[in-house]
Amino acid sequence: MAILASLYPWLKAGHVIFVIFWMAGLFMLPRYFVYHQESDPGSAEEARWVDREAKLRSIILTPSMVLTWVLGVLTALSIGAFDQGWLHAKLLFVVALSGYHGWLVGYAKKLARGERPLTGKKLRLLNEVPGLAAVVIVILVVVKPF
Image (tube, rainbow, N blue to C red; front, side, top):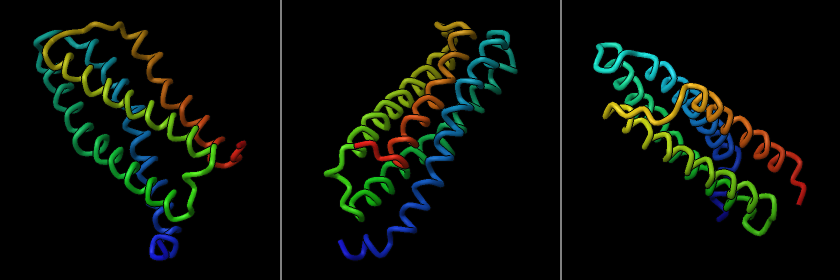
């Protein structure tokens, strides 16, 4: 545990860096979906969107989520934060964001198969989910209301 405490600033920095990357991906992917859905089914443009979405997921989104979790848990362990209420609430929102991430991955696979179950308007609204979660998470971490 002492080694984790000595690494705290580095763990925290890494955590924040990968949160930024993950959030960027969570904002980008639904926007990609909107453009994808506006392309003609079976077109070369649609194929390019499928490729872009897959690359975003595999290169940025999923690795960033995994590193966010790993570094976040290590950061919390390094300061003994698991008995603090604000962290429990934060984890609830991070679990929800992880579920949203999983839903996005599933939706990308539906789009790749040619299914388009949601409208562009609904996708634009869903694009607000990570922003709202970020507001709550930042308040919990900075203010530590409980």
